[in-house]
Amino acid sequence: MSTVELHTLTGAYALGALTGREAAEFARHLDRCEACTQEVRELQETAARLALAVAEVPPAALRTRVMAALPEVRQLPPAEHAANVVPMRRRMRHRLPYLAAAACLVAAAVAGGYAVQARQDADAQRDRGVRAEQQAAAVSALLAAPDATFHTTALKGGGSGTVVASERQGRTAFLYHGLPALPGGRVYELWYSRDGSMVPAGLVETGRSSGAMLLTGGPRGADGVGITAEPPGGSSRPTSAPLGLLGV
Image (cartoon, rainbow, N blue to C red):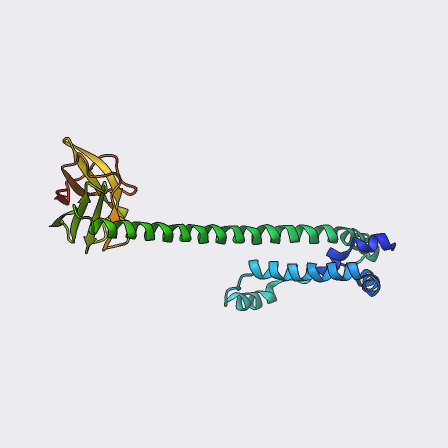
């Protein structure tokens, strides 16, 4: 095998895809080729990281099922024509580097997918944290506004709500406590009452019984705020009787 051909076998050697004779010849080549030695080392480290990224713990009962099935598995008979085995081995030897490369590509794609998803999840969580901090600061400023008005009422079905509004800041907040979970994935939705019509003003975060939120839009021109129970995702207009009506 020429030196040029040996330089192309770093990937196959790193994955253990060379035959015994080829592996021994390539190992001798590594003794005098620092570039290939470094490349093999990097490929082996990368392959190990990729394997860990996609590794899965097998079920505890897997070994028991395999051992129980062994008596029913027929062994292959000895090969009758050894001459047919040699060409197959030769074909597989030539295909192994390609198979190894394909395996690396698949592992890299899976690991890359996990990395991208993890980054997206982290970004989404960070964005939620930033929005929560901004909303908390806005609600605190609204509560301290000199012209802030407060209206509180008990809600039908349980819990209570308070509407805080400031014309000067152009903001309205809804503070709630003890809201029971709604069946069927339904959500609490807030509405501004303006000129006899109900305008959507936001959804209460699902899964939270107590908290505070800013309403979409300001209180100017509104004569009240209502809260209803709506289908998942909310509605463009109320589909049920209000659980509570509060002034602004």
